[in-house]
Amino acid sequence: MRGAADVAVAAISLDRVSVRLDDKPVLHDISVELTAPTIAVIGANGSGKSTFARLLNGLLAPSSGRVSVHGLDSVQDRAAVRRRVGFVFTNPDAQILMPTPAEDLALSLRGHPKQAAAERVRATLASHGLGDHADAPASSLSGGQKQMLALASVLITDPKLIVADEPTTLLDLRNARRIGDLLLSQEAQVVVVTHDLDLAARCETAVLFDEGRIVASGDPAAVIDAYRRVCA
Image (tube, rainbow, N blue to C red):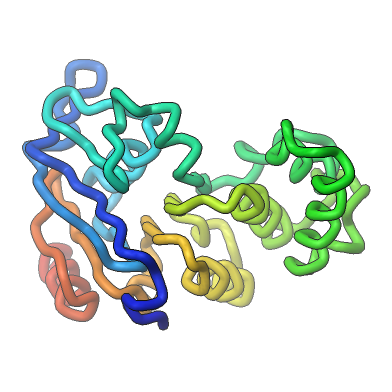
């Protein structure tokens, strides 16, 4: 696990944030500041975790209050926030857009010089164990390989913040461990929404959501214990 000195201090700040979706309250008056390099977000289904995650890269706007990501307003600076934040979805099929892994990574580098992008794509595929599948149909990859490709398509853009929404939920134990190891080894700040309490325990800090509110935050072991009490 990394220490705070390994990551430049970067703050995620929510100031009295509420979210309503289809006129239904989802998040209620949340204020929190998070500066840890790795942050676990835990809680029951429907507690507001994924809504919180989507606020961090501008996929959702707060109904009231302000979200600041590394000094950028998620609404006023939405384009800059989207460039800074990489988002990993639960289901990689929702994220893989091109027919082959090589084409999918190249899409993330559109606008870069063609030769340099091609070299970077090859190096990235090799470093994530996908070098032999560069030109294979993405649909033929295993679940673990698909999630690795989805994560690689984010990492190749060098985001300063990675938000992963339940990235290990669809994976077996071995692949879940690989994805967790890769996420927690990044120089970028990482927010991982997860039901995997072992993964949560490996983060520097944790946040517990319950019924649209943050009810505990801080040391992961203490927050996980609070979660178990909430679920009792």
